[in-house]
Length: 389
Ligand code: ATP
Image (cartoon, rainbow, N blue to C red; front, top):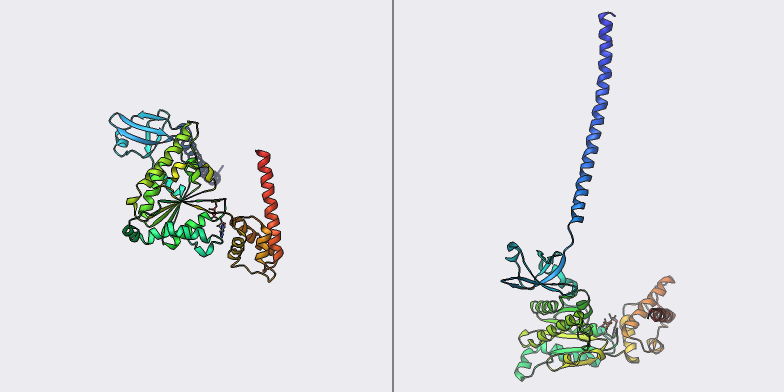
C-alpha cells in the first residue's frame, strides 16, 4: 500500500469512527434522560412508601392542660386519656384545641383553627333574601314571629323601659316543607340581621365530641355578627326526650343540649341576638327546653289550607309565563293537603312539562301532569321505604 492509499484508508476509518462516536453519544444522551426519569420514579415511590409506612393519626380534643400532662378525648369513641406532649407543642396548646394523636395517644400536631368545622356545620348569610311577601298562608305565624323576634331586635329599649323580657327563644313546629326556615330567614332580612343556620342533625352526626363546642362557636359567631338570628333546624336531634340507654352517643347529645341551654340562660347580656329553632317532631322534644327563659314561644306552622295554597301557587308562579286557562283556585282544590314545598315542586315541574313540549307558556294541564308525576314519585318512594323497613 502506498502512503497515499494508507492515508486514504485511515481517513475513511476516521470518518466511520466519528459517525459511530456520534451515534454512541446520542445513545448516551437518551440513556441519561431515561436515567433521570427512573430517578424521578424512584423518588416518587420512596415518598409514597414513606407515606404508607407512617400510620394515620386520630383526631382528638385537648380537654385540659395540666401539670401532669394533657387530657385528650378521642373523637368517635370519646375515650379520655392522660398523655405527654413535647414541650414545643405544649407551649402552643390550649384546652379545647383539636389535635392529632398517634396510636399511643401522643399529641403529634395541633390542628389549624378548628380546620373549619364551624364553616362546615353552619350556614351564614349576611342578610337572606326571603321577605314576608314570599311566604303564603302564614299571616298569623308571621305576626307572631315579628312580635317575638323582630320587635325585641328593633325596639330593645322599649322592652327595657317597660321592664319585660322578650321571649328567649322561638320554636317553630310543624310538618316538613311548610315554611319554617323561610320565616326565620324573612325575619332576619326584615331586621337586617345576619342569619346563622345550624342543623341539629349535623351537630350530632358529623362532629361527635364537638357538639357542645360547636354550640359555643355558634353563639360566639352570632355575637361577632350582631344583630343576628340563630336558626337551629331539626332541634329534635339534640333535644329529644331522654332515653334509658346510657351509651356515650346519648351522653354526647345531652352535653350538646346542656351547652345550648346554658348559652341561652346567659342570654340577657347577649344583646341583639335572637334564637329560633324548628322541628318536625314536636312530640319527641324534651320538655326541659320549653321552660320559661328557653324556647318559651311556640309557634305552630301547619300545612297550608285552601286559601294558603292559592297564595303559595301565586307566589311561586310570579315569574312564570302562564296561559289564561291556569286557575289557582282549581289547582289548590285538586292538590289537596300538600305542603308549601310540594306546591313549589308542582310549579317547577309544570314549567318542565312546558319546556319538554317546546312551549314557553305554561298551561293548566302542565300543572295537573306535574302533580300526577310528583304524586306517583312520592308513592314510589313510600313503597321503596316500606320494602326496606
Ligand atoms: P323542613 O322542616 O323540611 O326543614 P321547612 O318548614 O323549614 O322544612 P322551608 O325550607 O321553609 O320548609 O320550605 C321549603 C321550600 O318550600 C321553600 O324554599 C319554599 O320554596 C317552599 N315553601 C314552603 N312553605 C311555603 C310557604 N308557606 N309559602 C311559600 N313557599 C313555601
